[in-house]
Image (cartoon, rainbow, N blue to C red):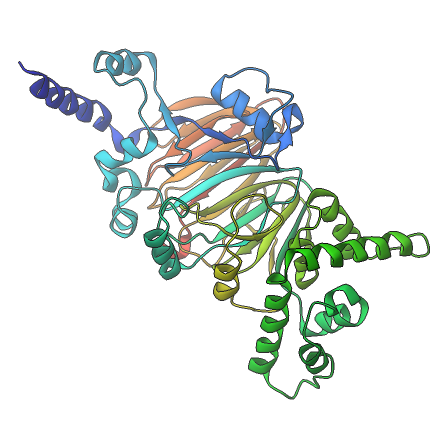
Length: 452
């Protein structure tokens, strides 16, 4: 047998091995960590703790930033299947110790994802599930819609590595701060009357028109003025921006000796300490300052400006890593692309409280087909069922211990840091142990399936 025939035989054996009992199999996953510099350092990071327990890598490095824990099939941080001893021995004999979740799904997508999901999104999970630990503000950014994502990927594939859109949702684990969406016209008038450093960077005619607008000029004209003012700020010369921020810092530092600064002004000084002379500091005046409590969620659609500021959260999104950045970052910026793609929608974003499914579980369902998230807090020695659904699910244990039983009578232990993949049409029941158990589930949004 030559080498080519041998490889073909191994592939056929591997396919048979991977394909066994696919509809009935609960999978444990080993997941990926991203060590971005805005992450929380060492053991103080929820991401670090989860990754350490999930990977068996030992104590987190006390000097390292742990930013994101990725669960899914995206090529920038894929999850891998953890099999039992019998499987591992067989896989090793075939020269394949590591099987990615995407490999597992691709053998028979319909059996694992459900037929409707497989027809829509092919042999891939339509969502990416994460935990974030944020110490320092992330960039002011937006994610492209599908049409722009395809164009950006085609033009700059090394920067925009996929062609998908990236709507997302952040569900707070701790107190969580973010900037999201543009402030109202009334609030912007307040900025123009109280922040001279902003006014100095904008054409006098635009600020006067906006400040004296009676509300009768129509939404489209107001939107155009808002866009013009924001664009002038973001496109200003770096030296001019640096000088404006120096003036702003001096003024606020002086005024805080005489009065209580507003929450936004205090945030501005924090951002200046993290990103000195960055135009994103000025941009923050134009964005809504959002503070989430644990259990509250914020969703962000395509072409909406946002920046996460601090705290820890569960995050779920369409499977993509496309980001267009314009401020509060040392990474590549594309200010003109961001300015042209923004929808300039004004108003405070919707905060999701979750819909109660039972006494222990709340569902967070943003207006996107790709994903939804369930938050389950089980007290000591309690049980809850997750019914069969026609799409795949990912389960993450944030804290506590317990057991999980499938509709096929497969029982397994659960503990902090464990991640499970549940195929379509599999019912599971979870029971907590001697302490409270915190479990999060991500799945395809129920609205995609219609009335079940």
